[in-house]
Structures are given as C-alpha cells and as structure tokens.
Image 1: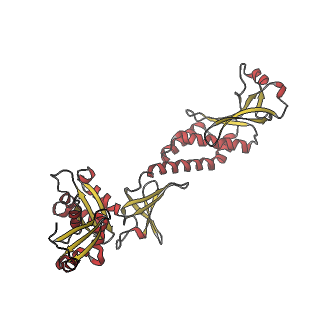
Image 2: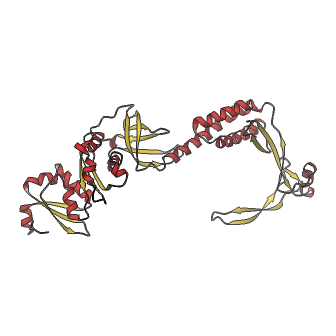
Image 3: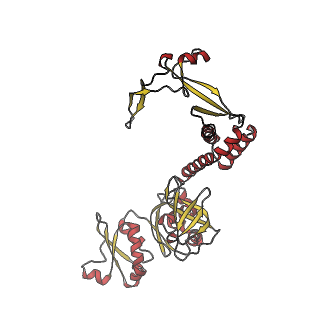
Length: 384
C-alpha cells in the first residue's frame, strides 16, 4: 500500500464525508490491528501506528514489564488492581497473575534491552510484515466503512438534535402509502400523509416547508417526524414572513388551528406605537397573503391579545361583532358570550369551529348565548 496514496485517499474521504481526519485515522488503526491479528495469527499485544504526516503504517508488538525472574514461570501470584464501581468509587482488588511470555517480559530481560525500564512499562518491537499493505487494505475496509458510518450518524444526530419545534425546508424525495420522505440535506425526514394540509397536493421534487415535531436519535441516525398541520407551523411561518415578530417587536401569545380550514393567532406589542395586527396583515394584505398561500388557502384570523380576558375573548371570536362577554369564573376559566342573531352564526362558526378555536386561543371555556337565552338566565347585556 503506497503510503502517499493512502494518506491522500484518507484526506479526500475526510473532506467528502465531513469527518475529522483523526476519527478516520483512529478507525483505521483499530481495523488494521484486527487485520494483523487475523491474518498473521498473532496472540501478542499489538499496536498499529499511522504517521499522520506521511501515511506510513507500522505495527508494533509490545510486552508489559512484570516482576522479577523468580516469578516468570509461577502462576497464581496475586497482583493488585484499582477498579471503579458503579457508583464511581475506586477500590483496590487482588487477582491472580499468570505469566505469558507472548505479552509479558520480566524486569531482568527488559532491562537487557532498555536499561532503567520499570515494572508496568512496555517494551516494543516493530513487526510490520512486508505484504501487510495488501492484506490490510482488503481486511480493514469493512471495519473502516462501519466506523465512518458511525461518525456520520453522530454528525447528523448533532446537526438535527436541536431542530425539534423548528421549521425547515426540504425536497420531496420519495413517497409510499403512508408517508412522504423529505430530503433535508444530510438525512431525510418523514412527513406522514396524515400531517399534510387537507386538500394540498404534494409533488415529487418540489421544495416544501415543514415543521419538525420530533427528533429521536438512534443507532441508525435521527428519526425526524414532520408536519404541516401542526399549529407550530403557522407560528414559524409568521416569524419568517413578519420581520417584527422575528425581531421581538411583536410577540405571539397563542395559536389555535384547524388545519385546512382556519387558524387564529393572537399577537401583541409592548411598543404602543406598533399596530401588531396591521403589521402582520401588511399593506393590502401582502404579508398575510404569502402565509395563506403557503397554507393552501387556509383562512387566518389575526387578533390582538389583551390583558383583559373579556376583551381578549371578544377579539378571539372575530369575525363576529357586537359581543357582550362575561367572565363567570376566572379560576376555572369560564366565560359567557351574548350575541345578537345577526352575529350568532359568525360567533359559533361552521360546526362550532370559530368558538372552538377561540376557546383554544384564550384557554377559556366559552358558551355562546343569544340575547333571548341570556334574558332567560337573567343576564343583562348592559353589565360591564
């Protein structure tokens, strides 16, 4: 194996895969150690050294210096060893020592080769076979590829570990009966068909914005679950399209969504000179229009969050008007809303959707009554 070609191939692999060179060198040294032991039937301690500058590979057999000559052939001699238990505490144990001249050398013999060497140190000898390059290349390949895959998985896991609850863009790569598979760069995410916006058509090869609902790291790489139905997807779209939200000038209080039908989003600003609702809608609806387009025409109500629960509930029931809100229980978060006949259907919404979303947006249980129903309960719409 030409050391220069080997070094060049390794460095190219490092650049191509984006893996630290030392990770690959360490994997190679481990693989070559296994290759040597397997092909040369070595039972001794072996250390493989790859010169990081030249790519030259050398193999060293080493022995540990032990005891004196009188113990060379004697089994059962007790030696002490420091171990760490499950609680992290160190303790000293005694175990039987068995001399093996393949991995041990006595102090007397070691000092004949290296004067001054001490017990516990090692003495090495180069044992690199002349034909080892050919054998090592074929034997170590599989092990090295595995190590590279492990390193790649770790890089991918680290890259995506903090992406949960974030929005990403990807390319629709594949499809099966239940899922779309979205190419996110280094890996793919799974977009279940149950998590797309009802009525939208997903085309192969198209670019798609998705919301990451779950990132789970495992031995095969990260499992990334995606959604376009999640309410968090709408929130991230607003952050993307509305600079004032991204900059923190406008804050999102809550989002309630019935994907494919309607979303309500409550916004506010601590700057009295900023109109949070108007800023989100944009001139002639330009800003909100881009978000609606991304959501396949889903209706969006942008409402102003108010510290007053009654005013917030009134805003949340948009587009209904002329509402009279009574907070009946602050602790249980219950409220009654009295509405005239003209606004009754708007307040409730189709199949109760409007009032249901308003309840989720405000975190209040909201009961809607007509003026007549309120009178029967003894409620005056002129109360504060």
